[in-house]
Image (cartoon, rainbow, N blue to C red; front, side):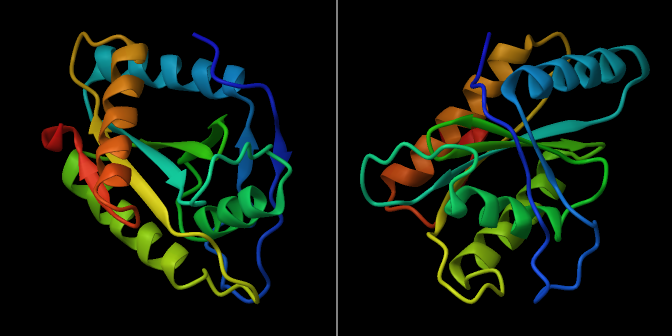
Length: 173
Protein backbone atom coordinates (compact mmCIF):
# COMPACT_ATOMS: atom_id res chain seq x y z
CA UNK A 1 0.00 0.00 0.00
CA UNK A 2 1.65 3.22 -1.15
CA UNK A 3 0.33 6.36 0.44
CA UNK A 4 2.00 9.30 -1.36
CA UNK A 5 5.47 10.44 -2.45
CA UNK A 6 6.38 13.89 -1.12
CA UNK A 7 8.73 14.74 1.73
CA UNK A 8 9.68 17.89 3.60
CA UNK A 9 11.39 18.74 6.85
CA UNK A 10 9.31 21.31 8.68
CA UNK A 11 11.06 24.17 10.40
CA UNK A 12 9.71 24.82 13.88
CA UNK A 13 7.80 28.04 14.48
CA UNK A 14 9.90 30.43 16.57
CA UNK A 15 6.69 31.70 18.19
CA UNK A 16 6.19 28.30 19.85
CA UNK A 17 8.34 26.80 22.57
CA UNK A 18 9.39 23.57 20.86
CA UNK A 19 9.35 20.25 22.67
CA UNK A 20 10.94 18.79 19.57
CA UNK A 21 13.28 20.81 17.37
CA UNK A 22 11.43 19.94 14.18
CA UNK A 23 9.07 17.37 12.79
CA UNK A 24 10.09 15.50 9.71
CA UNK A 25 7.26 14.98 7.31
CA UNK A 26 7.96 11.46 6.12
CA UNK A 27 7.32 10.16 2.66
CA UNK A 28 4.48 7.66 2.64
CA UNK A 29 6.89 4.83 1.86
CA UNK A 30 8.96 5.67 4.97
CA UNK A 31 5.83 6.15 7.08
CA UNK A 32 4.58 2.76 5.91
CA UNK A 33 7.95 1.13 6.74
CA UNK A 34 8.00 2.64 10.21
CA UNK A 35 4.34 1.81 10.87
CA UNK A 36 4.88 -1.82 9.83
CA UNK A 37 7.94 -1.98 12.09
CA UNK A 38 6.04 -0.58 15.06
CA UNK A 39 3.14 -2.97 14.48
CA UNK A 40 5.64 -5.86 14.46
CA UNK A 41 7.20 -4.57 17.70
CA UNK A 42 3.82 -4.22 19.44
CA UNK A 43 2.78 -7.66 18.17
CA UNK A 44 5.94 -9.24 19.61
CA UNK A 45 6.31 -7.35 22.87
CA UNK A 46 2.89 -5.88 23.61
CA UNK A 47 2.09 -2.25 24.21
CA UNK A 48 -0.08 0.20 22.42
CA UNK A 49 -0.02 2.10 19.15
CA UNK A 50 -2.50 4.59 17.78
CA UNK A 51 -2.85 6.33 14.46
CA UNK A 52 -4.30 9.81 13.96
CA UNK A 53 -5.50 10.82 10.50
CA UNK A 54 -5.52 14.62 10.24
CA UNK A 55 -7.35 16.26 7.36
CA UNK A 56 -6.98 19.99 6.85
CA UNK A 57 -10.40 21.59 6.50
CA UNK A 58 -9.59 23.63 3.41
CA UNK A 59 -13.24 24.01 2.42
CA UNK A 60 -12.62 22.99 -1.17
CA UNK A 61 -11.01 20.27 -3.20
CA UNK A 62 -7.41 21.40 -2.85
CA UNK A 63 -4.43 19.20 -3.64
CA UNK A 64 -1.87 19.99 -0.96
CA UNK A 65 1.69 19.02 -1.77
CA UNK A 66 4.01 18.24 1.13
CA UNK A 67 5.84 21.50 0.45
CA UNK A 68 2.75 23.73 0.51
CA UNK A 69 2.94 26.29 3.32
CA UNK A 70 -0.34 25.11 4.85
CA UNK A 71 1.10 21.58 5.18
CA UNK A 72 4.53 22.64 6.45
CA UNK A 73 2.94 24.97 9.00
CA UNK A 74 0.60 22.21 10.21
CA UNK A 75 3.61 19.89 10.52
CA UNK A 76 5.46 22.56 12.52
CA UNK A 77 2.51 22.80 14.93
CA UNK A 78 2.43 19.01 15.25
CA UNK A 79 6.20 18.79 15.70
CA UNK A 80 6.39 21.36 18.45
CA UNK A 81 3.61 19.61 20.35
CA UNK A 82 4.51 15.96 19.91
CA UNK A 83 7.06 13.52 21.25
CA UNK A 84 10.22 12.57 19.41
CA UNK A 85 8.81 9.04 19.04
CA UNK A 86 5.72 10.25 17.15
CA UNK A 87 5.98 9.93 13.37
CA UNK A 88 4.25 12.31 10.93
CA UNK A 89 3.71 11.45 7.29
CA UNK A 90 2.07 13.13 4.30
CA UNK A 91 -0.63 10.75 3.24
CA UNK A 92 -2.56 12.29 0.35
CA UNK A 93 -3.87 15.71 -0.63
CA UNK A 94 -4.36 17.69 2.59
CA UNK A 95 -4.15 14.64 4.87
CA UNK A 96 -1.44 13.68 7.32
CA UNK A 97 -0.98 10.54 9.39
CA UNK A 98 0.50 10.70 12.88
CA UNK A 99 1.78 7.45 14.37
CA UNK A 100 1.56 7.76 18.15
CA UNK A 101 3.88 5.12 19.60
CA UNK A 102 3.10 3.63 23.04
CA UNK A 103 -0.20 5.49 23.02
CA UNK A 104 -3.61 3.95 23.61
CA UNK A 105 -6.86 5.27 22.18
CA UNK A 106 -7.66 7.48 25.18
CA UNK A 107 -4.21 9.09 25.13
CA UNK A 108 -4.34 9.52 21.35
CA UNK A 109 -7.72 11.25 21.61
CA UNK A 110 -6.20 13.63 24.17
CA UNK A 111 -3.35 14.39 21.74
CA UNK A 112 -5.86 14.89 18.91
CA UNK A 113 -7.89 17.29 21.08
CA UNK A 114 -4.74 19.34 21.68
CA UNK A 115 -3.84 19.39 17.99
CA UNK A 116 -7.37 20.33 16.91
CA UNK A 117 -7.38 23.23 19.38
CA UNK A 118 -3.95 24.45 18.30
CA UNK A 119 -4.91 24.29 14.63
CA UNK A 120 -8.17 26.17 15.30
CA UNK A 121 -6.22 28.83 17.23
CA UNK A 122 -3.65 29.16 14.44
CA UNK A 123 -0.88 27.31 16.28
CA UNK A 124 0.80 30.55 17.30
CA UNK A 125 1.53 31.37 13.68
CA UNK A 126 1.18 34.89 12.29
CA UNK A 127 -1.44 33.76 9.77
CA UNK A 128 -4.44 31.52 10.31
CA UNK A 129 -4.25 27.81 9.67
CA UNK A 130 -7.23 25.85 8.40
CA UNK A 131 -9.01 23.86 11.06
CA UNK A 132 -8.56 20.11 11.11
CA UNK A 133 -10.75 17.04 11.18
CA UNK A 134 -9.06 14.21 13.04
CA UNK A 135 -9.74 10.49 13.12
CA UNK A 136 -8.21 8.28 15.80
CA UNK A 137 -7.78 4.50 15.79
CA UNK A 138 -5.81 2.13 18.03
CA UNK A 139 -3.97 -0.90 16.69
CA UNK A 140 -5.75 -4.21 17.32
CA UNK A 141 -3.61 -7.35 17.74
CA UNK A 142 -3.30 -9.27 14.50
CA UNK A 143 -4.57 -6.37 12.40
CA UNK A 144 -2.89 -5.47 9.12
CA UNK A 145 -1.46 -1.98 8.70
CA UNK A 146 -3.98 -1.27 5.94
CA UNK A 147 -6.86 -1.99 8.32
CA UNK A 148 -5.50 0.43 10.93
CA UNK A 149 -5.04 3.15 8.31
CA UNK A 150 -8.55 2.52 6.93
CA UNK A 151 -10.13 2.83 10.40
CA UNK A 152 -8.29 6.09 11.16
CA UNK A 153 -9.24 7.44 7.72
CA UNK A 154 -12.90 6.46 8.15
CA UNK A 155 -12.99 8.18 11.55
CA UNK A 156 -11.46 11.34 10.02
CA UNK A 157 -14.13 11.31 7.32
CA UNK A 158 -16.83 11.04 10.01
CA UNK A 159 -15.35 14.11 11.72
CA UNK A 160 -15.25 15.97 8.41
CA UNK A 161 -18.86 15.04 7.53
CA UNK A 162 -19.96 16.35 10.91
CA UNK A 163 -18.77 19.79 9.86
CA UNK A 164 -15.01 19.70 10.29
CA UNK A 165 -12.92 21.02 13.17
CA UNK A 166 -13.87 17.83 15.05
CA UNK A 167 -12.45 14.56 16.28
CA UNK A 168 -13.95 11.12 15.74
CA UNK A 169 -12.67 7.76 16.84
CA UNK A 170 -12.91 4.28 15.42
CA UNK A 171 -15.96 3.85 17.67
CA UNK A 172 -17.84 6.63 15.84
CA UNK A 173 -17.98 4.78 12.50
